Amino acid sequence: MELQLTDAERAFRDEVRAWLEAQLSGRFAHLRGRGGPGDEHYAIEDRLEWGRVMGAAGYNCIAYPKAHGGRGATLTEEVVFNEEYVAAGGPGRIGHIGETLLGPTLIHFGDAAQQERFLPKIVSGEEIWCQGYSEPEAGSDLANLQTKARLVGDEWVLEGQKVWTSMAPWADWCFVLARTDPDAPKHKGISYLLVPMKQPGITIAPIEQITGGAEFAEVFFEGAKTRKELVVGGVNHGWKVAMGTLAFERGGSTLGQQHLFQNELDRVIAAAKRNGAGKDPVLRQRLADAAIRLKIMRLNAMRMLADQSAELSREALISKLYWSHWHRDFGELAMDVLGAESELAESAPYELTAAQKAFLFARSDTIYAGSSQIQRNLIAERGLGLPREPNR
Image (cartoon, rainbow, N blue to C red; front, side, top):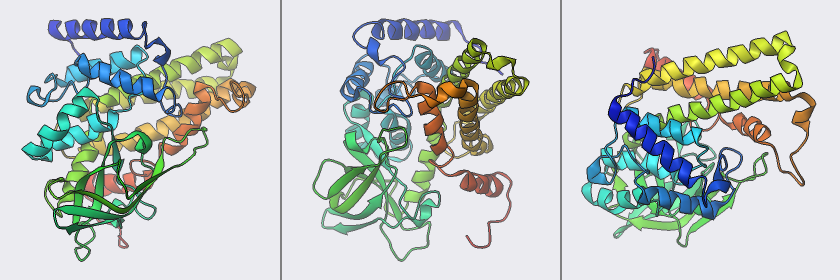
């Protein structure tokens, strides 16, 4: 199962390829291949500017309908763009949470005023978003969240804490799940609020990771406010909207991610040839297995993307579990192939190689966006129709 491009889609691919090559050979050349997992702090201001340049050229949010500032790109064009972006070494995109999560959610669930206010600045790259879902006692069990919002006059007032909030230090806005009816059942009484980050009552505490970076952060809401009308999907109906956001997370960018994985695999294979590790029969078999599993991942992603509903399909249900374990296992394989070289930092005091950063960051892949245990429960209950666990 592979993409079959029309003449128009091949022309689009050539256009994207040429634009990326021109931009990443000029003033943004230093951004090639930078800013990905474990490297998030690299050249923040330049990458913010890169996002604005992409917006001005019409390359942000290409799949959005034209009425909302996008190109109305087909799924195939979206996949082509993401694959070309990775192939060109496009830098990690600071605006990706707004583009891939919040924007599609607003298009599907938001009202006209919310769409008119927020979508143009996501498309242009002018406003950066972060996601306020996980809490210390509500990570994979998201419905256990305790952050509260109460309506005071024309404003919601928030009290609570979020954790593992990617891009929080640089975000202008956060979409926050908060409990707005404390007496409602666990999955009820939750609202999806749009909250400005640059205000009194919000404290951001970066969490330093083993990679040396601090992409994630804790966010404390102590009387933070947002306007009454900035509730997506209606008051106390946030759970459905939140599940829609998770479905959009498994969008066209997933094949771009897999292209990135392929690049990582190619580099490790090259290292195995260079240092002789490829002569080891066990390592050869593990490399072959990684390559086969990556092909399977792509085939499943193609099936998943054929379903464009705002619900998690069966293919989407297994996607996160599959790719996160592949990447974690591959990180270990990469270190085994590199051998003693994997123990050496690239430079002082703690500058790691790309392979080392990928290995360390991949430890989180099986935790964020729903741990593997929760993913298996979702597959069992929603995909296979099995009964819920008695204690849940």
